[in-house]
Image 1 (cartoon, rainbow, N blue to C red):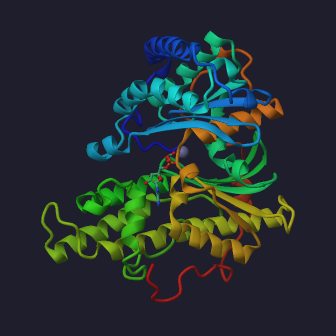
Image 2 (tube, rainbow, N blue to C red; image 1 turned 180 degrees about the vertical axis):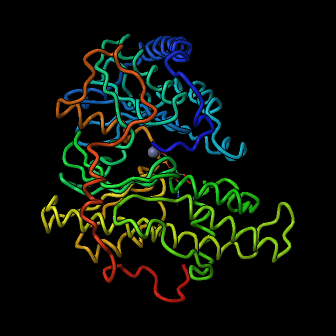
Image 3 (cartoon, rainbow, N blue to C red; image 1 turned 180 degrees about the horizontal axis):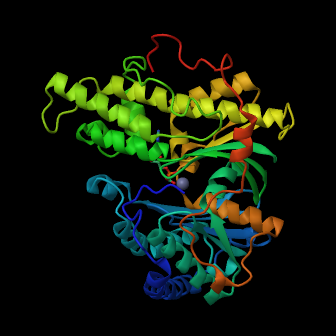
Length: 440
Ligand code: KG4
Ligand code: ZN
């Protein structure tokens, strides 16, 4: 699993720290349930009963920097939801600092879960199950949601469903659109980039993943290097969103990023560290050429953003195209029923979606992108993944105490070697994504 956080190689034992946070979260969960029960006792509602004939799952997300909670029914209706984003804090700090992210989760989780339930006009006892992200993610953040959910389940005697964050991203599309198994899924976020075939709710074949950074992580760092926060219009946006917006005014052919990353490797792995180094060199050169002062934004920033997006998304699309050729070679998805689901925060990017639609049109795939709100981290995707598992009768914890967080967790069965052994070349097959001299 990729690690964009400062605790990278520390000898960090989350199990020991877990005792302390278990205690904290116990306190939170106990206080939470009491206040919720009290506030609801005298105001039993009319419309709750209409939901009670069917299953309801509460989902809790705290794997990174969003505290999310939502309740969904078995048809995929969102009955209640709440989300607290830590984006502004982390923008001000210059990145995500794990203990700060944890403290903000602890500060907000009770209120967020309570708000989601109140929006749904439901009580804990009305729920069929509670699902929470237990892997992968930042250990300190994962602990908060996992222990909070476990305590609620134990107190109210409700089943617990542990959730894999990337599986939840992959299956969210099924909540809003008819997407049958098997399908191809591309996930690009601040922590991951991976390509997989989803065969079942709990069966994934991993075709490729990033060998170094994640695309969102690199976009965030490039936006910081370009000081885009100093432009008032972009000061509150995530790095990826800021780059997307500025790139709209730029020329994608203005800067050359040279050879595609990993162009010699005929597999579906991704790599973003080389692109990151290249843009840093371009920025340094441009800053010298333009004599920019400390807080100034480069006059060529829009061109840099547009060219960088083109290089980054072009790389992802080439690896994706090879994945599609592999799927075809191995007949993994029936022809005529091939769908590509794309999700994760970077999938919000409209320019990326445009490139993906070109690849899908050429390769005979239907492109499915959930609305941006469901691509970035949220409680709904966790609740939906819980609901899919609940309905299928898979993945419900037999022993809640035996469930612990797993900060590093791969997705599904690793097929990366098999893809590599097929040695699929894109020479002469490469898809043109950008007509010459086109503004993005
Ligand atoms: O999926 P997500 O909410 O959290 C993780 O699991 O990482 O993704 C967050 C990432 C951030 O790096 C952010 O810069 C990026 O998604 N992002 C975007 C856009 N909106 C968010 N990247 C490119 N274009 C966007 N419009
Ligand atoms: Zn995510």
